[in-house]
Image 1 (tube, rainbow, N blue to C red):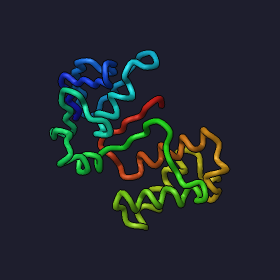
Image 2: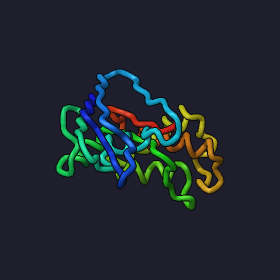
Image 3: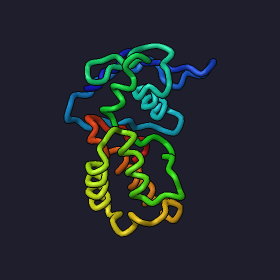
Image 4: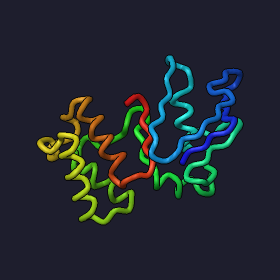
Length: 160
């Protein structure tokens, strides 16, 4: 599912990630542990093609992450990296419907999937409230719903 070979990221003289290699098979849970600044978030951003590696390769689903197939690969992933962005003037459900459309889900399927995830993540009572009124924890759960909305094959969670 995921193969990383000799992944390195440098910012000027600072090496954020140095010669990292690993493999994650389908159906497995894999985690990074380390102190702040160890390169965990940078690694996940490189896996998602959000940051270009200085050196090394990333393969997801048997395809090398590059500019040519990045979008195709990302359609199969879900991610919650750093602070998620939302539209505070929209409700929780409206936010999910917006992202469902962006993921290419039909409106009916997006609504059904959104309702199911909101129930599972205990946000049903807040689905019609403006996001601006959500607590931090509620926003995190809504972010998880968004990451799962299109049934990704792999899920990346930064500081879950």
